[in-house]
Image 1 (cartoon, each protein chain N blue to C red):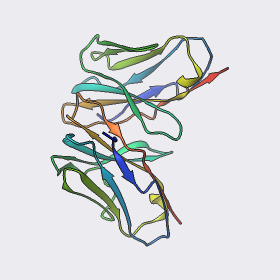
Image 2: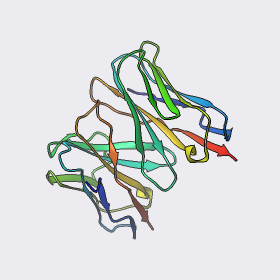
Image 3: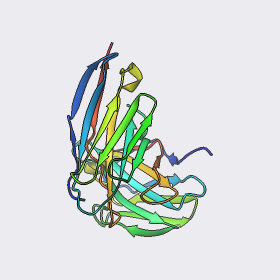
Image 4: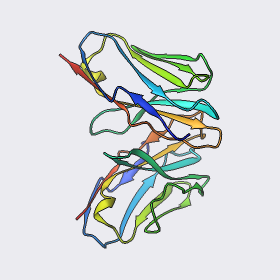
Length: 114
Length: 111
């Protein structure tokens, strides 16, 4: 398996634009997580899915953020409209089970909002 | 789980020396603890998943212990090598399925 695949690796956009981040989890993994990494807050969980269903989105910062998982092999994280404070590295991770299985992380998307 | 503390924040260790650092977490409602190694410009990679009080895990020169009653875990690196330079993250899970990553311990191995 190629691991968790994220795209794009880098995204530079202007404030107010819509940004879509993409993730393909490892085949057979039932859980998918979206994390955001910043200097101030470290690695924080935004949302996670189980079998394509959102389970906990309490980490999503505000209504500008939305995430979907239309099928077992694809998820998106959308920011609309984007703001400079959204600049961060966004990681997607997947796992077979929730607590006793390690997370496999994608290579991340470096987002810069100007 | 409301608060995960990792100490120290940063650590410089001479190559060949052994070292250890700490992850502290609330012991109530604990379910499992993950340790990850995060090298610069890469993604976090799992080292250990631990669940039982008194658990000890080992992977090469790296080992970890877990005390769920008092809420801490130690990560040990024996005979540090340059490739051990990374940030080490701990992440406790509680029974309500909440996971919070610590801010990490940044380890620098000096040649």
